[in-house]
Length: 292
Image (cartoon, rainbow, N blue to C red; front, side):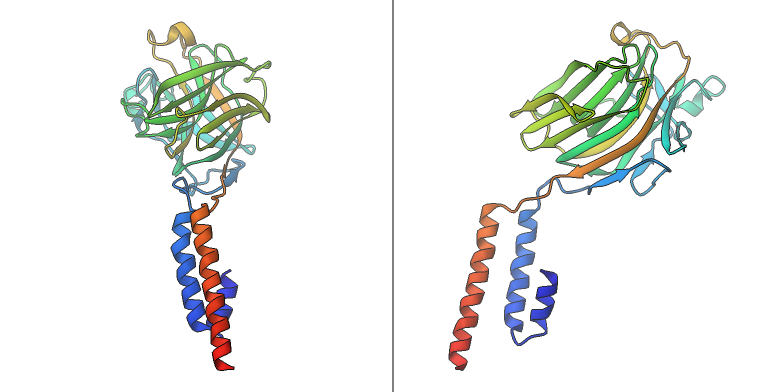
């Protein structure tokens, strides 16, 4: 399209080119959906990519998470990313863990992302009181108020044969569904993904659908991609997740990707475009007859 417009610009049809350019620029904003912030990417996590990610540092996670986030606990090596949970240096200088007894790693996307497919290949951390997260999080991260909109996949370290999928939207409170995996998520790499479009949401494991959602409760806010590992605070959710014994844990990620939904021009803008091209053609034919 751009090449054709440049050719028109250099031809006797300059008025036509100007009109066509005006039509194109008028229609572009109408054909791009509201969820068009972040673009598609595949990060194989061979090294830290600061253009895509931030490592949370110097922030205490809200209850019931019992950790302070430290950038040193997100590391890269052997073509993988490790998110480590332990008590160092909290046991020596708790202020370096934002006043928390445990330190851990959290990776957060710089951009917000909307409709599309979110995927992560990872080996979950194991151990009572430990949780591995992969999610799309909307709202202020690490705030006591919690998310405003969320789509997530979570594996509790006390039962790594079970996946929890979750969602939160303006029309629904936080909803969680447990799914039997049929394997130990801490024993090897598996790919966990969710595909999100307007009014529909589906989760999959290793390419196989495990849960679907449709209707008004489907989340609809752009959000940041988050991967992290955390320990549960004693006495809060330990009845479900178990008590963290402070023995340390690690989740290992092999890849994270996002594939956007290609925006489809709405019928009205498309009709306007074809109508505009028709008018241009009619004007050109009329001009040719006049010159003849």
